[in-house]
Length: 215
Image (cartoon, rainbow, N blue to C red; front, side, top):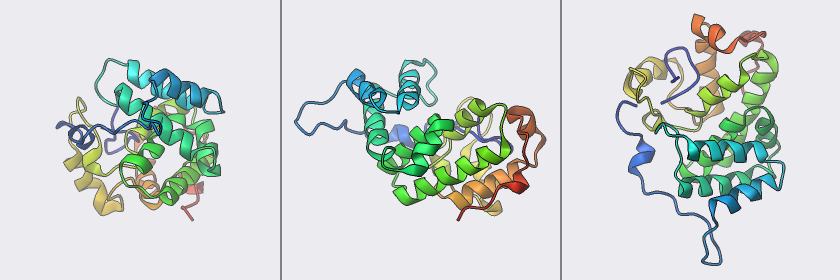
C-alpha cells in the first residue's frame, strides 16, 4: 500500500531515486567487509533484534519495492547500530515502529537527513502512537516506513496507480514538501487522519486532534 492521499506509506511508477544512485559501500575499517549474517548478529546481540528481523525480511522478499540487496542491508544494519543505542528517541521508536526506525537511520546515513531531524521525527511518531493507539500498528509502521525521511521523488509508487508528482502536487501546498522533518510529518497526518481510509486501514482508538505538534 502506498502513500496515497490518505495513507501513510509509500512508493513511483518510475524507478526510485535510490535505485539510480551508486549502491552504498558496506562498512569495514580493517578492509574486510562484514557479511550480512555478521551485521544482523551485531544487532541481535543488543536490543535491536526487531530491526535485524526487518532488514532480513527485506533482503529475502521477492517484490522489488523496499527490497534491500545484501550490501544495502549491511549498510542499513550499521546505520541502526551506530545511531539507535545512543538515541533515546530512536530507541523508543524502535520498540513500536522498527520498520520506520530502520528507514530513519538510513535517511541519516544515505539521504542527508540530519540526526537531529531524524530524532525529532522519531519523537513525534512515538507520541502519535501513544495517543492514537492503532489496532493495526504493524500496518501503520509498514506504510509509513515507505516515506519517512524521504523527498517525494525518493518514494516508490510502483504498482500503486499513482506517481510521486501527483502526490506532491496535492500535499506540498498542505505543508508536506517532503517527509524529512517532523513538522511535515505532522502536517501530513493532520490531513490524512481526516480521510475515511485512515481509520479503516489503521483502526486508531485515539484522536489526531490530541496529538501534539512537534517541538
